Image 1: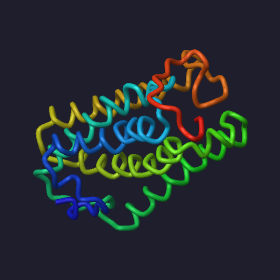
Image 2 (image 1 turned 30 degrees about the vertical axis):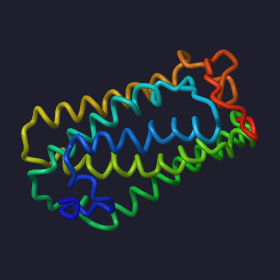
Image 3 (image 1 turned 180 degrees about the horizontal axis):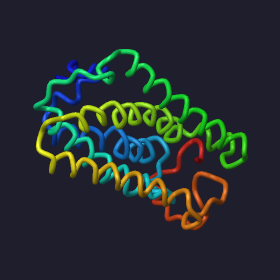
Length: 194
């Protein structure tokens, strides 16, 4: 079914609960695992899009989007290979550009920029952008139950709202990945401090 709208990744063929868990796992779950295993620390950081958007919004969106597209036959521009290549390229250009800009403006130090969980976040953000954007047109074009599409939209709205909050003065914009006031659980002392 993923091939019906040209997706490079077959996750939309999976059970919807598995899709939601997969999205949670490769995003929030993997980043937290990298922090625990390789950095020896567990911390959430200040970003609401990470704390709430990645844990609730995107998995709900992906899971319900999988249900919505499971019964459809698709034939729009979003089924074309060029569309999928474009979305993947734009996603990576945006997130690599954001990473470089954080370094250039001094928001990140070089140490922050090469931190394993931060590098993974930049890599997986392009994939997450791809998942979010490429399934949206089939969800909007689907003839499936509108209440399922509504729940998927609520999941996406949760993520969008948390991202918006991150852009406001409600979130401290002090340079650095981790604020001095943030709670960090140290599991072990690593060779290199993050």
